[in-house]
Amino acid sequence: MLIVMRHGAAEDEVDRVVATIEEMGYQARPMPGKQRTTVGLVGNDGRVDGSRLAALPGVQEIIHVTKPYKQVSREWQPEPTVVRLPGGLTVGGDEVVVMAGPCSVESERQILAAARAVREAGATVLRAGAFKPRSSPYAFQGLGRAGLELLARAREDTGLLIVTEAMDAEGLDQVVEVADIVQIGARNMQNYSLLKHAGRCGKPVLLKRGLSATIQELLLSAEYLLAEGHRQVILCERGIRSFDQATRNLFDLSAVPVVHGLSHLPIVADPSHGTGHRDMVIPMARAAVAAGADGLLIEVHPHPDRALSDGAQSLFPDQFERLMKEVRLIAEAIGRRVAEPAAART
Ligand code: PEP
Ligand code: MN
Image (cartoon, rainbow, N blue to C red):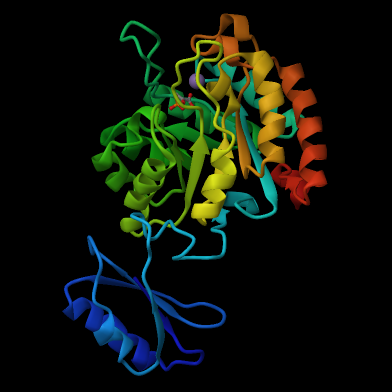
């Protein structure tokens, strides 16, 4: 429920609304706006009788949020959330942010070569996993903490920001020390204890859609983060499981406009995991930008044929460079721009 205050409502009128919500056994989230303050009521599971609040001085109207998720909904916050990253980079505004790099950190040589290549082509965030959720326990599991150190080294070398996955609460504490954005992977989208932990981690969180998750389930998982008081959340469409073997996953491009309609949170697209084949990544990356995605997550490897994970869907650096040129044009055609590396922005 949202309690909309009158334009110019006094501070003590807002305080009274907050106190009344707390007396009713719920939590209040005051949100000062340019025009008026809104106070969100959270902690309810079902409809709340708002008559007591409606009668308070300074209250203009009561809005019942009709969706099962509250704070992530457009009803709760009509204007888009803009996630702010170090160096002035933003996700969810006019800029389209390209996050690129290998599936896994494999060695210093590999991650530096990948970072330099994607930086050269114009990416602003380096993506690579140190903790890898693999289907087989015998597959490469990632370098762990040593991988995080290599990512820090790659950031120092290139100025790229870092997005990397945390698979559990213990790993999250390590990831937070290095990452500029903490990734919660598809397999953990419904790991609610990890989400609660991530909601308190203090770094922006990139939440990937689960393997068989509906958009409503994705938004409810994001609600876990916002329920902890976190606001800097980026969603990611990475394909969902389907009956069709022609692609690794079914890349659900329609999730982009659907999420934009239902939520104020930004959504980026990952056509690498979405399709599983490098030749399909390129057209779907173009399409995702055209569809309004707030960013791209693209796997790029200096030698995809030697990659320890996801080589088949990893672009060669020269393919990525061409793709960047194309997505710049596409972004411009819809009134946006691809974010430039920090040095080019200042
Ligand atoms: C990844 O980004 O490398 C990854 C493992 O993705 P997902 O969780 O979408 O499978
Ligand atoms: Mn991968």
